[in-house]
Amino acid sequence: MRKIGLYWFGNDLRLHDNNNLEQASAALDQLVCVYCLDPAWLAPNQFGMAHLSSLRWLFLKQALQDLDRNLQQVGQHLLVCYEAPVTAITTLVSKHGISAIYRSRHGGFQERQTWLALQKQLPGLRFIETDTQTLFHLKDLPFAQLPQSFTQFKDMVEHLPIDQPSSACSALPASPESKSDWLFNFPVYLAASSAFDPDMAFQGGETTGKRHLRAYFRSSYPSNYKAVRNELDGWENSSKFSPWLAQGNLSVRKIYANLRRYEQENGANESTYWLYFELLWREYFQWYALQHGRRLFAFRGIKQHKPLTSFYPERFQKWCNGYTPYPLVNACMKQLKATGYLSNRGRQIVASCLVNELAVDWRFGAAYFEQHLLDYDVASNWGNWQYLAGVGADPRGQRHFDLEKQTRLYDPEGKFINKWQAEVRNLPLDSVDAADWPVDPEIAKLACILPA
Image (cartoon, rainbow, N blue to C red; front, side):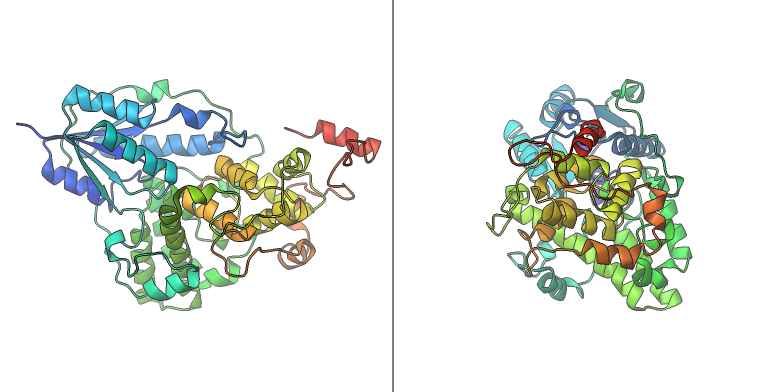
């Protein structure tokens, strides 16, 4: 009797360093490779925003096209289903007599719930889940409960051995599912932003991600990373791995292996250690999301501490569109909307502004980042927002950045602000007072014409 399995791709859109595919290749006669594009992603979420901006949509589409091309080189192809995963996979199981389902472990609460719902829907199947998106395996972690702070976590894991990344399979079992023209049926979505910045033009897919990885470690950038990592702009001023990491186009273990090889050939220093340090931060949030589940999205966070914030629609729209009284914040927000990318320093600045200066519920900022960031990762995004809002893993509580000082430090000549035409001065936070009376007629007029 032929053994037929299904590989459910999610945030692991690659062939290299993918133990699931290796296991499936060894155990099966036929394999269906599927990606489920849930229509719910295109609908507004509880915060009134879509899960994907046009740029995130394009980046995902490029990654899926690249994955399909790479699968075809090893005797497979990708099936994209425009349905909720439980519906689509249940149909495929019935159609082909599938007996085993493989996927990478996902830390997101909704993704975990979907995995459990599939197991309940298909009780007679084998479900195989492995850790392909983290440096460490769940079974190898030296604790039963995640440490309460990153520093405690780092001290416990930074010297643990890390598996060498495996190569891509040279061949995969054929698919019983005929190849479809899913690309031509790809749902129509919003046009890309017109304010395009060629310096931040990312292209999705494993092929491009691996090319960028090679180029980065062939340069001298890793040896200078710590000195420039807080710059607001410039392709060379951070590793830029995060968009490909978020989609799983690049394996985090492959990045780590390349980092160690670079240190052997060029010498280790504080900057190369800091690259590992940043990978450990990402690692911490992956296990943080898995442990805390639904509480990752709670207003009170994991501390059950209620922030002194609310929701002010006008303030939030000004923040989203870069029309606050703070030029540096405006420049960062315009860059995010135009490119789908924002430096780590920029993210901290705009998040602090939203929570502290504008007193807006941090979850709306996290949802806006989810919509626009090409490197959106549920664990890192929501974990970092909790951290800054003082409801997460930071033992020091809420982080408040002095925006004038940040401007002096990181844009002293105003080049970044001028690039994004972000100078807006003498603009109050609100065009109306508590009784809905206009603060100033001209300001009220401006508020009415701000882009939505």
